[in-house]
Length: 127
Image (cartoon, helix red, strand yellow):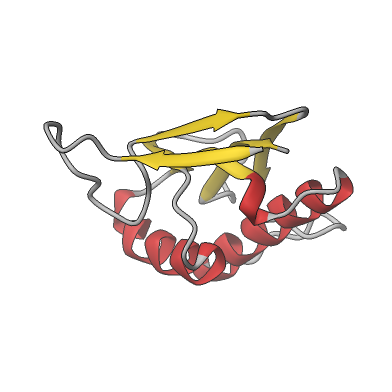
């Protein structure tokens, strides 16, 4: 798989560490990740928004690993927050987890199915 992160010079630049577009060529597999929430394997949801964000990324990593992939394969993700005030925590944890990686990204502020959930992230990965 070949990957090219794009940020067109004549368009608005990203507001955070992500790419405006990601081009994939030569991929043989695509994985669509359903929204992952900040709950552990037993369904427990911590009250801390930071702990929920860390669990979301841990759950994403587990799904990627189950498909024989990792964060290098993540090409697009959508973050849904229930409160825009949680955005700084979301960006901090995302940066720690993804490090130098810059998948395409969308942010939505909306309600979630369980009021205890503060964040949900879905994604697309290619290999």
